[in-house]
Length: 67
Image (cartoon, rainbow, N blue to C red; front, side, top):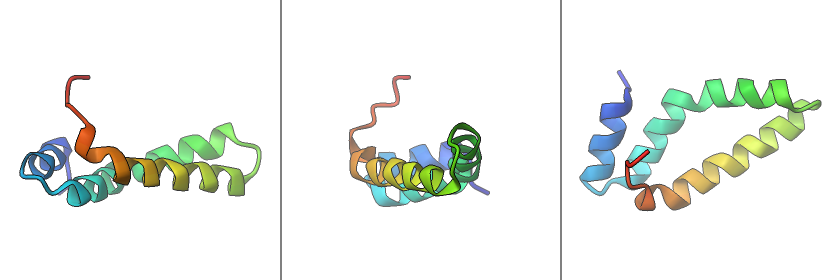
């Protein structure tokens, strides 16, 4: 089962790719559904989701867990 503690554990051991993958697995569907509700066209929502997930992959190593 994926939860926030498993994401944080992966990040703390330096496996940022795994942490990002787990975050997408846990929150991806909810985020995509939100984007589909905001955007008029599903393709716009999917493009925004792709941008978000790519940014997550690139920046996971800089996340400081202070929020």
